[in-house]
Image 1 (cartoon, one colour):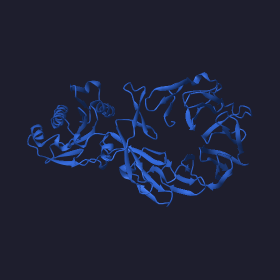
Image 2 (tube, helix red, strand yellow):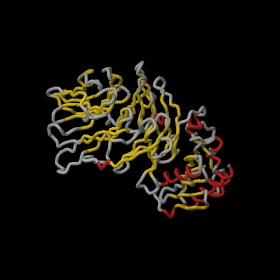
Image 3 (cartoon, helix red, strand yellow):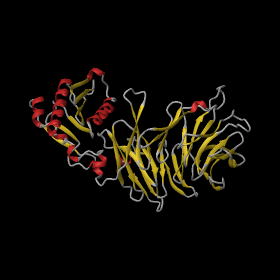
Length: 496
């Protein structure tokens, strides 16, 4: 994405959309260009110019396909030039090529047949510099951006990391490294991440080691970097959990803050405009995720935005958040743009702009009188579960209802989300019920603003009453579960 232009690749087309309005500013059909194979593009940008790299089609199907490049102006959609990969092992002028990256007005490619890395001018494709791999060394992994061109090489029995200056191709440094198995290189914010099977190491572009960790588990790590700090998201070494842990590294002092638990279980790490961001689930019960800005000096997380439902973070821009969400037909997706606005009420940010008073007290939704009528002779005690602290609520977002005997069920009540509108709550309901095992006839509409969904096996009911989505677990009898869920919905309506 450029500052105010979103570049998208729907089908065979490439299009630019105005971020503020969503309107298409320009479009062209990428399949009209010979030897270019959409729609599996990898996009990169330097200034206003965008490189779309795609696997080159291979008529024979025997040799590696290589990459083909299409370079265009991201503001106007004007195609500047293209370069198609030739057959594997071919010499100039159309060699087999692999795309490395883009930055500083350069497009970086690798020519395996001749063992050369080249930088091409983004405006016309002319060669700016070429650097040969050292004799006796074979390429293993690499990446390139405006900070560096990093190449991992296998030289005999040793592995070496070679880093070049992107503008001129001048060698910055070269050192022996010790990756454990299959290695990947990731450049971001002036940092070079070297990831292998059980290890992750980060270097500064000047060669200083910033971070190193070797674990017992396979490393599926994420890295984001700015001039001030790093975010390294990695698996926990505990065998009893599948959650992630975030290491926040202060690049000035070298201090590492380990963030575990819900706050450290980030699903993404981003570096935008000199700031570090991540996004994660908001609490265990709530059906929403929260985007946070992370201070590299303290590890403190500041809420930036919250979005409910089964959505994925697509991109974080200077002033916007872009999400993609599955459409109702499940074959397409919907793009949602959220404007970032400063707010002193961070709880309101985490609640998606919903006022504190609109969140119900979970334990008040099923009062003792209702349970006494449904389960004669049973006494129940309410045990509130506090809401995540980011929400800034004084009332519980969940409630465990405990019987005073062994004959009656333990009930668990959870507020899944309170939407700004009933339509937003409906989207959350659809996302939640998609994970339950039920048939369409179990979607019960009692009146326009109350909907229930009953699982076939688990004794679970998900209800939407207006703008609020709730869940009830533990009731074995389906009819009793429906009655209690309707009572929850009435309690919510009465409270409003």
